[in-house]
Image (cartoon, rainbow, N blue to C red; front, side, top):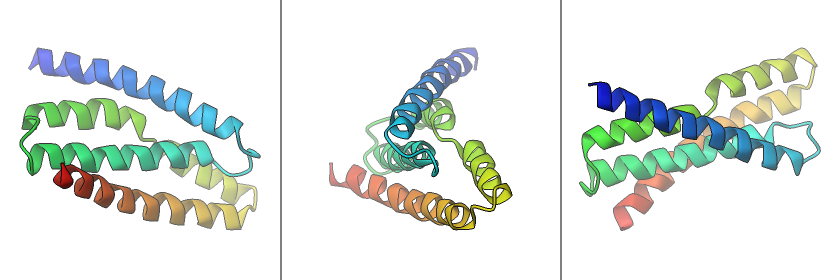
Length: 125
């Protein structure tokens, strides 16, 4: 159990640093009004989630234990649902209703589409 927890913690650290870097780079390249960095990180995380799930479930390329470590450790820290919720609430608080609703629609719609795409890609390998 301890080695698995250590692996989850290590990948969690890597995931959170990756989130910080990627979201920051993306956000710097935008006007800053819409949280594009969070959207990109969440969609990439969903794509990777579907891909890893498929590799473990369909292809048996990685074990169920490794899948757990990757999904909970790296992707749990990479994806940013709490940040998404906070940014949406901030947009609503600032009466940026179009951005708030757009953020909810894009994060959820694109996230589900990315999970499906990841599974499809994993099955194609």
